[in-house]
Image 1 (cartoon, rainbow, N blue to C red):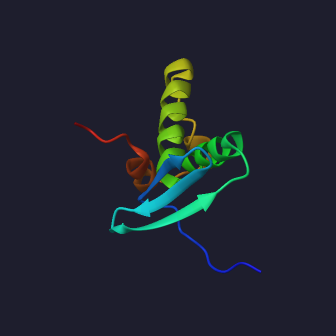
Image 2: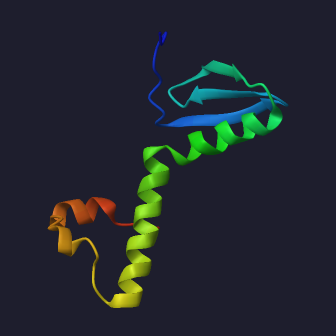
Length: 96
């Protein structure tokens, strides 16, 4: 049975030791959840999978691929799915 759940947004995944990684959150940096794996390879796999699973990572990937498709085709790939202008604005890359 699960003993709890962690929402992996605004978190930092850190490899602590050979077989140990931790998850900490920006809102509570002093609170850290540590996880131990059987091998260093398994630990690295968990770290990479957790980093790729975050909403921000997926959002950045969507923005990147959307822009690449638009460069190649000249069309916004989200238009064919009826994505609203407001949603497209939210997906826009941050301007610096």
